[in-house]
Image (cartoon, rainbow, N blue to C red; front, side):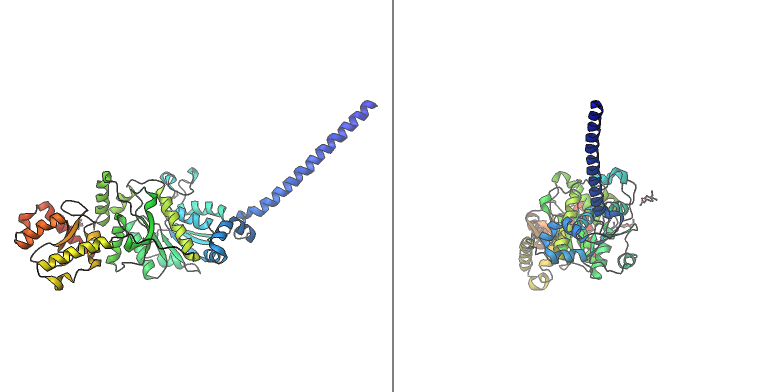
Amino acid sequence: MANNTWKAVVTTALLTVFSTQLVKAAWKEYKLSCAANKNNIASQPRQYDEDLFREQLARNYAFLGEEGMRKVKEQFIIIVGAGELGSWVCTMLIRSGCQKIMIIDPDNISIESLNTHCCAVLSDVGKPKVECLKEHLSKIAPWSEIKTSAKAWTKENSEELFFADSDSPTFVVDCLDNLESKVDLLEYAHNNKINVISSMGIATKSDPTRVSINDISMTEFDPISRCVRRKLRKRGIVTGIPVVFSNEMLDPRRDNILSSIDDECCAINASRDHALRHLPELGTMPGIFGLSIATWILTKVSGYPMKKNEVKNRIKFHDGILETFQRQMTRFSEGNHQSSLIGLKEVGYIVEEIFRGKSPISGYSTKLALTKWDADKEVSLTNLVLLTKDEQEIHEKRVLENGEKLTDVYSSEVLNVIERTFKEEQYYS
Ligand SMILES: *[C@@H]1O[C@H](CO)[C@@H](O)[C@H](O)[C@H]1NC(C)=O
Ligand SMILES: *[C@@H]1O[C@H](CO)[C@@H](O)[C@H](O)[C@H]1NC(C)=O
């Protein structure tokens, strides 16, 4: 009997403990499922809790303010190119509370993408880039509307791609790596007054402190910028396009690459894009460029005050060159008439675009001066050459003063380079 009583006590005790545990477990289960329901909004797109949105974006609300965040939410941003650069732009815009974006890219994720991409994983390889991003981004921000197109953007289909939606884009981000399409896209946005921001050369750059955002006309030491500037100029666009770029100068040990970029990009005929894709590139840099773009857009649209970057361009340097050139013109008493054709803008163009900041004779880029080239021709963009001061003195003495023939003074190699440069300029002007 005592034995049975003992058994009953133990059983009751065990049952009590067990049922308490059971109730506890059930309660936990219930709570978890509530939480899951609250968070399981991914399966129900665009149904979300405003509280959850605010909790997720609390820091941005604190930074940009209520009004700023309202503006961020209202944007419809189109990102053209969803690779190494575009993936970072899309992701941070979505993480920051943009509610509507469109991503355009015809390519699939490749194994190489994993080195630079924002979120692609091994199992994404082979998937369309736009699908990969949409999948990841809807898990981050189920409230967002992410439109995609796996078409290549072209001038011809831009209307269809940009304006199919009832909303017009408030911003277009150029993340293309094909130079011709890039210039087409920038021209299209500029002419149609769509806000745009673009990215210049990423390959061969490695200094994160040299990346900045400025007007295309203010870019320097970057062969891709130079090339885009020149192509846009030919289409009548000189300023008005913000770009992220790096003014890091190329390591001189890579100088052959630099001239090959210059030649590839700016040569009128080149199969440039193939070459550009195979330039050495550090995997971290596209992210830095992409995050710079996303940050710029967020602060811009939310009205957050940004101090303008010091204009680090070379106006002073160009001014010095202009002065020495004007003195040369005075020495040959061609004074006002001819030298008035050449102002600061022209000097900037000749130095940066035509001669890429260096003497075509020695390749030196310090102590530069402009000189009239052929003594018998008028001053023009195709009769001015950028030389070092020493070279210019010799040129002035022998060619302009003593009237020696160019062919007697210079090797045919030098003359060819200069002839090719003038020919290129004729093409661009
Ligand atoms: C992407 O992958 C699909 C399916 O594998 C294929 O049909 C398509 O041609 C690929 N697209 C490109 C641009 O390589
Ligand atoms: C471009 O290519 C064409 C044909 O290949 C050639 O005739 C022309 O001279 C080239 N132009 C330049 C500037 O190299």
